[in-house]
Length: 495
Image: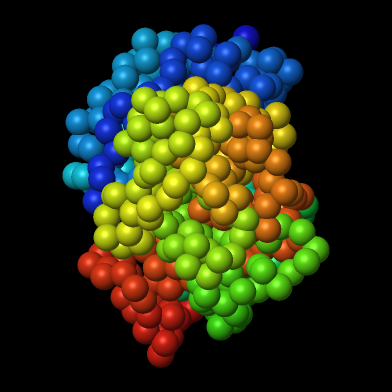
């Protein structure tokens, strides 16, 4: 039986967020090795779960190595990155492997190396030699680099945003590796990157024009001789040389065809580039629209404080407007360890006066004074059974307090930053989302899968901050130039 290693090192790094990501932040989310990889990821709607599911059915022995992931935040500290990478390399060295499945993000930046995923893949390739098959999975928000692609045998990227197909991508990666080991296919990859930046609000896979691109990609995948194809719309919050979308095609031994097909996908996006630049609704207008909707809760997506994009999770600008205008009642989640500790010291059932949120920086709103009653203290652990963006099953937002204000607002205060990928984040506290007029979710498209079932509609709010939908707000030093729409006159020479 051939032995296949499974490893991952995943982080979405926002280079505009000043707080670096350390090893402890990986431990807070997931840093497990050996058999713990199976117990943690086996039932998760994640690519690692898909790999673990399919390998035995393909007659391959699973060798769990190490998996590490941290909540999106600033660049990874040099020491943390090098330590975790060294542990992965040590575990690979200690095993006799016939193949490797590698789950990376594609938008990881370390303090000392901007293309951290490319370096990870290259270090592994250097260790195992040129012949060991390596199949890699990437997040849809990858800034795919030639170094990443050149270091592995084949690559597959998520096809949905919100990311609901992660487990299937893991299954697909395992099948590609099995066919490669059996000698049935000889994967050849081609990557094309047009000079384009796609707005985070235009990246939803269910909406045009991305839906058209994904339909064409699916048609291509089913053609004879095509192993797989992928689109990575990119991650504009990482200021790196490879920022921007990537179009990837893997064929069975036909390099020129892989290049031509990838070019065709990229050209299709380039022709619709004017439709790929979207902004959100101003804060005041968004709150007014929510209050005018009598059909049920309206979810306001706080795009500028998109936790899944690396923001601080304590932005208060929407809450400030809700309180100022007497709107609501509203449900808001804020990262505020100090306020949580104050609630814990006061106790459940007691009244508290707090200043919540707005403590990480001056970009996402000030601390907001509230008065209310501590309704709940919770350890912050919750389980998500359904496929949701990020694919995690076991989640932890740290010690959490629920404060109900005199106006009826529910303010959830957590001790660990948590992106709103799962409604269990609030359901676990006994909250009934449909009893509120406004739900605030700190994200862009990622929270849609969780919040859409309890919302009459969803509004993308143009809040400022380090995950603003408007890339013109950022001071880039390393991004490609020229790049549309930063330089509107950009011409793409396809020759």
